[in-house]
Amino acid sequence: MSTDVHSNGNAPNSKPFKIFIGYDPREDVAYEVCRYSLLKRSSIPLEIIPIKQSELREKGLYWRERGKLESTEFSFSRFLTPHLANFEGWAMFVDCDFLYLGDIKELRDMVDDKYALMCVQHNYAPKETTKMDGAVQTVYPRKNWSSMVLYNCGHPKNKVLTPEIVNTESGAFLHRFTWLEDEEIGEVPFVWNFLVGHNKVVEGDPATFPKSIHYTLGGPWFEAWKDCEFGDLWIKELEEYKKATEKKVD
Image (cartoon, rainbow, N blue to C red):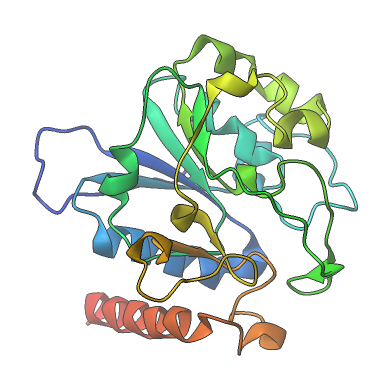
């Protein structure tokens, strides 16, 4: 898979933190802005890897047929994260429809080796029946838990996430983390997976200010969601990303 290693020089001897971002060709710009927002604010070295279904198929790591309820190309391939990280250390998976406003080091520093994985444990039942560009909105237990996950890749329980299992197991088994006991799933503050249209900022309470915004119903890169809440922040980041890219070309 194509990788992207960036260090800002603050921690020359530390191994880059691996972040796998779900990639869908329809949302290429969302991936680029998510990646840019992570790198721009990170005080630790990062290795950013897009999870591209076409590449995984070429390598024989992914072969399952796309189901009608899969709204993105990475609905299932996301669970290959521990395998792609060689079942070593901690790595993160995140959907591409995120915008990071905080330094990822803060989240990385929360990891606790007693857990097999850590995530925001949303209690979320969307009212909408469609999302993004008309994709069907499905409701299931632990909805959105798998959209941003810190994986303890070397944890014995995560060894079960082989390509065979990821390609054959049900959505319920994978998205609900059924291979784990409840106490093996750690929790991180909701502001690291702040759901647009669900989570709310409480004025004067910094504990509610988003560290990463998740445009789970659809973001400003889709025409129908141009004016969504926090859409202006994403558009501002897109403009910055474009300028930075132009500078590199110059």
